[in-house]
Image 1 (tube, rainbow, N blue to C red):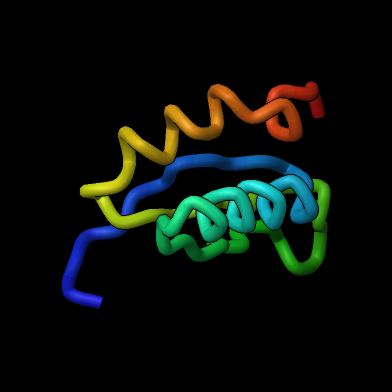
Image 2: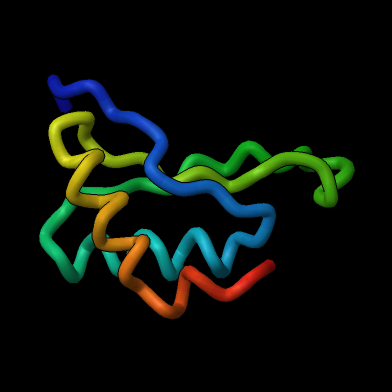
Amino acid sequence: MDENWVKAYQSSQMIRAEIAREIFEQNEIPAVIVNKKDSSYPIFGMCEVHVPASELDRAQTILMNEDAIKQSE
């Protein structure tokens, strides 16, 4: 993992982060979830989906066109 990874998506709901990660994987973009939720108070914090920096533009374009992500939290 020599490449820099950047945040492409974030949500307060883990399931939405999982959906975004799966969309990236289906489009052959490597993705990982970084859980920044507080373990004692899970209402605080976010779940972030990170992708390689070289794939950020493509990842964001894919999410903009994805109905599953467009729905409001």
